[in-house]
Image 1 (spheres, helix red, strand yellow):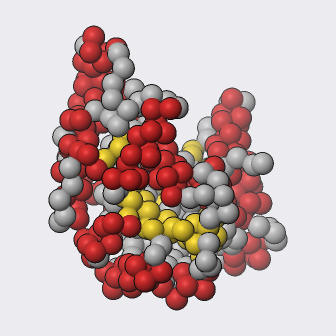
Image 2 (cartoon, rainbow, N blue to C red):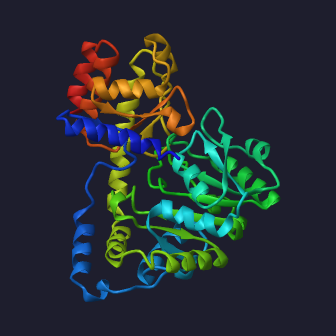
Image 3 (cartoon, helix red, strand yellow):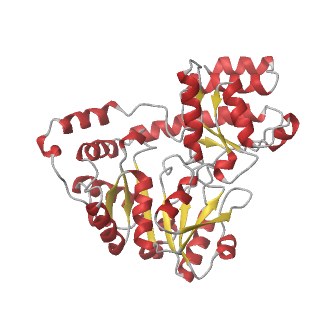
Length: 392
């Protein structure tokens, strides 16, 4: 049994740091920024509140669930209430709770390829079988591709838009086709919306806004990790039909009892602060352009501009061939050792010949990382150096 390969990259980077190396990490699936002071102060106040020192409801704080439901109502233009929401220990736990309610031994769950390895891992943890579905050239799923992978054991589809690592956003017509396919074949849709705030093209739509009739067979998963730089706080949620929420609540009650109250109070403050994700989205949009343009100036790299999310996902196959590396894994290891820049090889996402780089870092960090990558991989033109200095 192997752990998430992204964690292996992070561990190697930390080992180099421990030996004194100045390593820049573009491998993490999290914002570099600290959690906002407003959220931290809410957590401090919760620590001082004796009510937060005791057990709470297994389904989660009613005030937090109400705020999540209100946000979902705005997103989907359908009515949601606190009863429709279960609070979880992050979005990954929410995915697990959904899958353990839906999947039995031998049931299959369709996942995108390329895709985040956590989707496959959580399906396995819930006792199911993850079946990769090859996305098209723009990294989007299609009803035709889904149908080629469907069997009588297909129980659910995990749909992520914007996706990780690709940043792909599924347009409305494609979502409508996928929804029609799911309804026709009785397949559940688990909509992983963790990157929904980072829509760089204005084209993102929740699947339930496009196909409201799918409400009875859809689970929506979200959280505060990415939008509010709260990955370590571990607060997420799922919204779903009553039978899924009932199963999730029972599982939480039998295992973790409830998500820590202090963390939920922090998440409540985060959801009351729309400014943080809006500001982050603005900054990420600018930094994705900076990174993608710089990567495309390096011979052997072809980097598409992602529709959303916080990752660039370039094709480096020509670079591998030119320099004699056998895989993205070899290239990532060389970049870490030589340039002291950590990236994730495409093999982690079922995408050999690519690497993933996170642009959810500050400007100085990103500019320094770009300098190091270009110095390591190609001669650096004088004009490009001047452009980077102006960006500072």
